[in-house]
Image 1 (cartoon, rainbow, N blue to C red):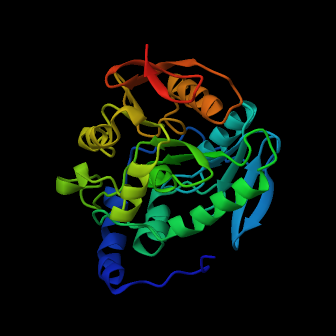
Image 2 (image 1 turned 180 degrees about the vertical axis):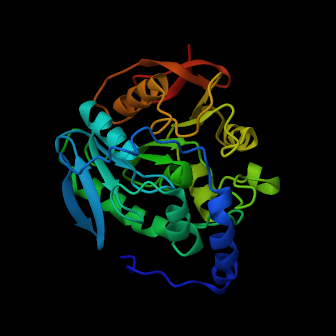
Image 3 (image 1 turned 180 degrees about the horizontal axis):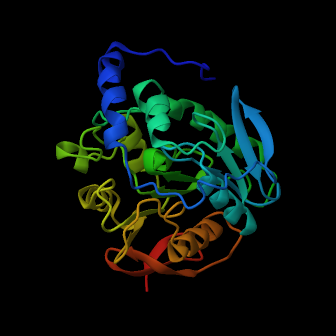
Length: 310
């Protein structure tokens, strides 16, 4: 169980003053939200408390469970809309509040809450964010609570932006599907993007990377091809590290960052749904991908739940 308030380490304290002074000038402009003037309510969501933290749930309790991890600006209306879309595709979606308030849509506030003061390691190389310990517990709880359902205790995890790489750190018993959307950590404040060695760093501790490498779960990774927040160098390392276990989407000819939320791409969403349904056994497969490629070639998620070229 994570504490409600997090202590500020000496290292973070040194950074906080500069961060607060500079962040309004350098805040990521890639999260553009079409719904800023119409915040969505929690209607349709069931409120839960797990380990002292708020979790919203939506969808049929008999559907395959899915954990959706929100982005740096907070649990935005766009993230909540994505949860609704996934519920409409017959998933039982859990949306944990990792920081801030429900409906928050502020990169400045999110950076302060998550990075400068909170449980996320946003800049250091090969670092583990302490919030992962609570998310692991959440996944264990959901797997146990849904063991009698159609997915038989197997769940999927989607991470986005700040949490984009987290699904790989969560590849443990009970997690049968992982979607890594525009993994952005680690990054610098000034300029507000990965630079230098950060570009090739996966944002995973050595132990988490080792566990992810030993897993046999195939996963999906995606980004916009022009997105400097999730550089091409990082995606290349993901390909080289996980080889035929990862199918990759790089959306061309369009500027954007948040592939499934504020910069929603319908084909990337369709591939995500196809992959999750086959992996979580609500669809027998195979399902051919619209955008995702395996080793640079068109691919499908097979009836056996693995990637294959077509």
